[in-house]
Image 1 (tube, rainbow over the protein chains, first blue to last red):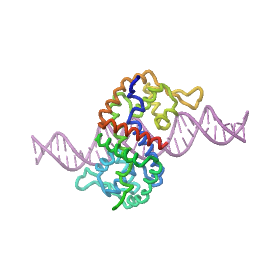
Image 2: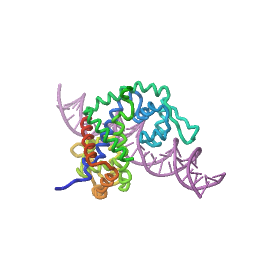
Image 3: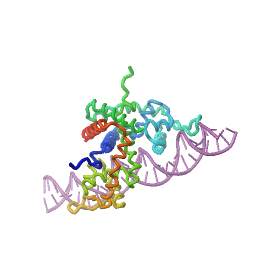
Length: 143
Length: 143
DNA sequence: TGCAAATGCATTGTGTGCAATGTAATTGCA
DNA sequence: TGCAATTACATTGCACACAATGCATTTGCA
C-alpha cells in the first residue's frame, strides 16, 4: 500500500514523449544526411515546399521555434543555396524567406524519406493515427 | 483528387511528437529552475532517487542518452554536490554514479513538480493514459 | 503629431544530443 | 596463455533550442 510515487520515471508522461521524439528524429538523420539536411532544416523545407515564401515570424509559429534557432538555421540554408532571405519592403523589421530553385528541386529527392522512416516504425496504422490525434490534442491544450 | 502528400508537415507523425515533447519539457524549465536543475538533470535524478547508485552505462540505457551527453551532465551534477562519480573497483572501465545526501534531500523539494506540471497540461486522464500507452508501444517498436 | 509600447529579428550564453573517435580495461578464444 | 575483439567512458565537433537581451522599425493613442 505504498501508493503512487509521482517521482518515478515510469509515472511521467513527459519521459516517453521525450524518448519517442528523440528516437524517431534520430531515425531521420541517416536518410537526411544523404540530402545534406538536418531534421530542423527538413521541417523548415516542408513548410517552404508548401508556401514558397514566408516570414521568419510565421515560420517560427508553424514550427514552434524561436528566432534564436531560426536565424542561424536559415542563414546556413541560405549559404547552401536552398533559400533566400530578404527584408520586407513594407515592414523593415520583417524578413521574408523564399525557396530557391535548388531548394525546390530538393523536394524530389526528399519524397522517398517518409516511406523509409515509416518502414522503420513498425506500429499498426490505427495506433499511429490515434497517437497523432492525441499529440495534436495535447499541443492545442498547451497553447 | 490530388491524393496524399507525404511531405506535408501535417502528414508526419514525427512533427507533433517533436513539438509536444519540446513544449512539455519547456513547461518544466520554470519549475526546475527554482531547484537549480535542468530537465536532463531532473530525469537523471529520478533514476537515482530510485536506485541510489548506478553505472553510467545503465543510466544511459534507462534514459536513452549516450556518454557524450551524460559525462558532462554528471560532472556538473558532481560539481553541484548532488552526486559522486567513482571508478568501479571490479571493472576499472565502469564509473558508478551515487546520490549524495544533498542529492537525496532535493527529492523533497521536487515532489511538488509533477502536480504543478499536470495542472499546466489540461487533457483528460484517459487521453494521457492512452498517449502514455501508445508512446511506450512506439518506443519498444524502435528498439 | 509625438512618444511610449509593441513588434520582428539578431545575438549571446548555457545546456543538451549524438556521431565519430580515442583510450584504457576486460574478455574470449585459438 | 597471448592477443584480437569488445566494452565502458571520455573527448571533440556540429547542430540545435531557448531565455535573456539588444536594436531598429512600426503602431497606437493621448
